[in-house]
Amino acid sequence: MKFEIEKRLPNGLGRAGKIITEHGEIKTPAFMVVGTHGEVKFVSNDDMKALNAQAMLSNGYHLRNRSPEIAEAGGLAEWSGWNGPTLTDSGGFQVMSLGSGLGKVVSMEREKGVVNTAHKDRLAKVSEKGVDFVDPFTGEPDFIGPEESMQIQCRIGADIHMAFDELTSLADDYDYNIEALERTERWAERSLAEHKKHCDDLGYHQNLYGVLQGGRWEDLRRRTANNLGKMEFDGYGLGGAFLKEDLGEILRWCNEELPEEKPRHLLGLSHPDDIFIGAEMGADTFDCVAPTREARHGKIYTRDGNINLRKFRDSNEPLDFGCDCATCGAGWTRGQLRALWRSGDLEKKRQFYNLASIHNVRFIVRLTEEIRKAMLEDRFYEFKDKFLSRYMVK
Image 1 (cartoon, rainbow, N blue to C red):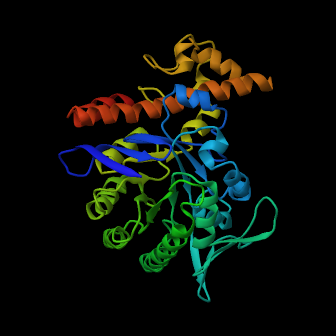
Image 2: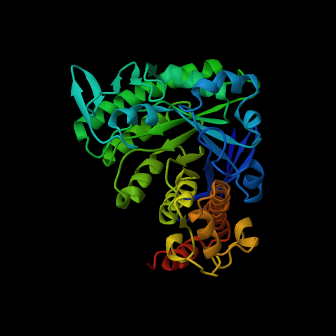
Image 3: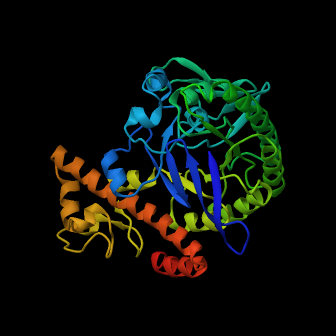
């Protein structure tokens, strides 16, 4: 994998560039569309190409049981039919969040040297070796640690993998964040060692990103950025639990310390103001399931802010004036999509999910394209102010 910086913002952190992988090029800043199981829900590979998606992110945890089959097919890009750049996450977030009963880890407690997610059934237990958890689909005990995560991801064979890390929560205090961060750094070394054994098994080179944690504390963020920056990672994932208003500062702390010549991926964010902050503060790629998930619930992205189709019965308005997605190009109105969505006909609902998902994903993909263009033309800050002054008006 190669990373080339084409243009830098005056602040020295934001940049436009190119990530060159075995399965194609990613022009950055870029949004990676989430296809959890190797496909984007209700969006075909042809749709993905048409909306100009550059890369797909899939879930190492959810694909783990199919990883031998994926390896046999030649890796994720070929197995999925996407045939473009791909990324997988480590599965660490999924196995640790299982114990909370929620989509995010709510809090942690320490008992006898073992960290348990706060859940009455104690479904996930974190220790030095990794995470013991109960598979929610089978009810059987399971385990994933750094070595297992790397083996799974190398069988799946995405172009970019994430090192196994421990996600903390806003409920965790400073002392526990130090403990978890040090464990994550030890896991990073183990991830690197195991990844090197298998990263060429499918006949092409697979790359590994280290994942930065550290919560909301500047000293922890800068320290771990320095420590991971000295390791042989190909790039970095920027993660962790923090308040939205702290995003810019946290990214600045991390990216002022990380090696400039390696790409950085901001995990799990896609709201336009977050993408602007991320791009300005040195993030190169982004991912989030929100554009498709929210589309299926009737939330449509527009340049004048998001709308809910519940309010647009019989409306002849386009989804978003000036949108270049295939859904808008075909002339679908807000009222027509609402009718499909509220229909009792399953096929009509599936058609709605497809049309709405295409629109929302194209909205975010186009935003990163426009940010990149503005960077290259030295007008990023002007574009940012103009876009957000309209989008955030509500």
